[in-house]
Each structure stands twice: as C-alpha cells, then as structure tokens.
Image (tube, rainbow, N blue to C red; front, side, top):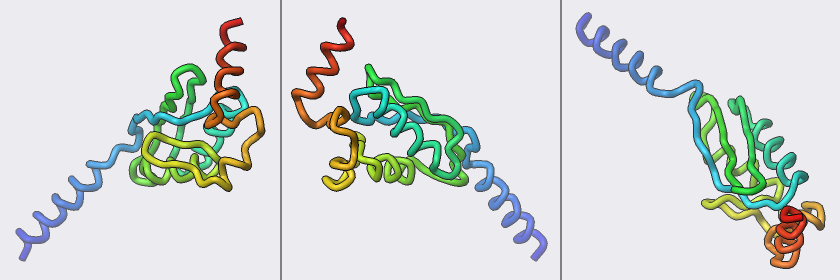
Length: 121
C-alpha cells in the first residue's frame, strides 16, 4: 500500500510541474492601428493568468507570457475575439467586430489601405 501511495504522490507531483507558470506563446491577431493594439492587449491582459501581452501593429503578432496553470491559448483567444478581433484560429462575431471603432474595421480593404499609406508617410 505504501508503494502505491509513493508512486501516486510522485505522479501527481510530476503532473503539477508539467504546467509552466511562465509559458510563452504568440498568436496572429487582426487589427490595423494603435487603438486596436490597446484593445487587443487589454483583452489579453484581463484574462486571468496572463502576465504580458504585446501586439505588433506591423506583423499582427501578439506575444504572450502566461501561467498555464490558470489559463490557456483558447481562453485568451476567446477574450480577444469578444472585443472584435479575429485570430488565425478563431473569428470574432459580427456583433463584436461591429463594436470596434470605425477606423479599426480591419476586414475592410479600404481601411487597411488607408492605414498602410499612413505608415509609409
């Protein structure tokens, strides 16, 4: 009986250490401007367990540091799509997308072109 308890204790201990409290990941998130950046980062940071979220306007890459014991990428992405931004794996509802500022309508080709021309100047 003692052997079973020791083995069980070791297994539980090993499982607990398998989750990383400073996991790093990146996601592709659609957006076009600094207002998008603020909205995306705020949505990610407000997810319990997320320690750092930095979105790059040029590359659309969201770099994350988070506690895998408290959250995962699916939960983080759900928070991001809830504020109207698509990720590579998930798409925001039309209602959420329509709630973003008119200059942030990244699905509109004209708006993306306008933001690209401003970046070049």
